[in-house]
Length: 94
Image (cartoon, helix red, strand yellow):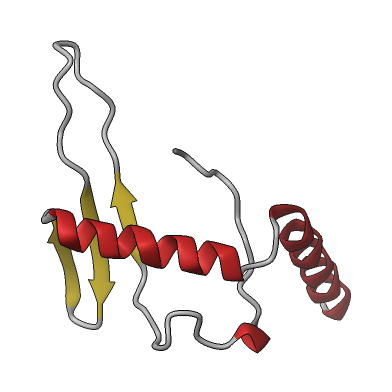
């Protein structure tokens, strides 16, 4: 399920997962021409580089983290409005 929206996680929300979490990307692949599907992979960044996770348990934990963060974030429309206001404020300061 692709969600091509940007959502703001306000500072006041705190840490929805109980700890800070490094940036990560969940890579789901479409079936190839023969109908085969590559397994889902998670790429997670950290201080010294990045790691790929392929084990189902790891992928499931990252999916759960994504849902928790998404649910704690502002909705797409509110986030868009907030970002536009911030951009206007920045432009006015120049």
